[in-house]
Image 1 (cartoon, chains in turn cyan, yellow):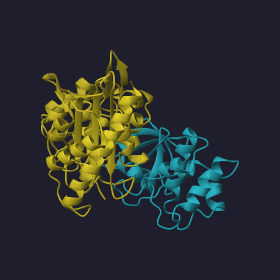
Image 2 (cartoon, one colour):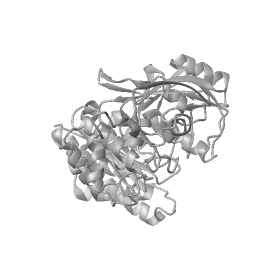
Image 3 (spheres, helix red, strand yellow):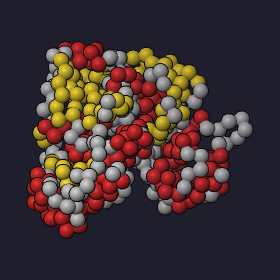
Length: 152
Length: 293
């Protein structure tokens, strides 16, 4: 049976009816049309579906939509402001940290949680923070450089 | 991957959760962080009729120290344990094991109760909890009982918890005096990996003579459940902590385990690594103990 939930996504309040077996990534992508969040393995291995749930980076494929009721979600679509792209997004572009782009949303959100906790992280901390996000294109080096650059 | 259909409950108190577990006895499973259960449901390994989510029960998320005891609610996230200064000061091997679990994304969801309740032989937290001789608090409508974590596991995914019983907390008596511990895990990669071997060790030294008064070694991933190594512990007790002694204990630990062979490693390799990690975690425990003298 569908349940009615309220949640805040990228500062906007939503009221939606969801089946208990709908995951947060499917709610975001199919019901709310926020396809910036990618769905990769759907098993919590790849990190493509990373979103911030109450400020914490999580695999949205391992969260039920109903569990997100009453909570705050931030997706990649919520990073750009009227001032332009988020510094992390800008740095990813400038440092060549985006190739196919499939991991980028998740990478950027994992990096955002890190920078909010640790504004000036060292390289080992950056590597640890993105260790749940797989990238098959870049070899990670340019992503790490982009995060360092955004921290400056 | 589509999750099988289920009915969903979100109680807001432990007693309501127990009522639901008792009412739907055998048909309902508790949902904690979901990082194990939801994956198994997507893979159709499990398809419970009902899920009782524990995520909205504030009583389960307390982490506090009082009267020499550390109380960790079953719903405390692994990332909170990994970041806790109290944990790092009082029970550092638990902090080390929390930081070794999964990935930052998984640690933000996974809970200590889930890591214990899912009873995976390669789980990170149980060996550390076993060397601290942690107790589990189990609740059902019939009441509450406490159980040493060493008596909890029966086999892969199997525990002595009754089907309507919930783990509500983990209680650790904070070691006093000259005692220390360490945890190490070995995988193919450093994150997002199933352990090949994981080991925790604990040593308590007699202050002046520096003889080992108490020793505990727990081995993960090398048997159907995490196991203590009684032979290694017997080798250590009453002796002076030296490298030669730790080598003997490592050999004893290798004999106490029963590893399987799979694509992650052969049984022989696992057994050898039990020796290496036992020696190294004993060295960590010794240095932790000496730093508290």
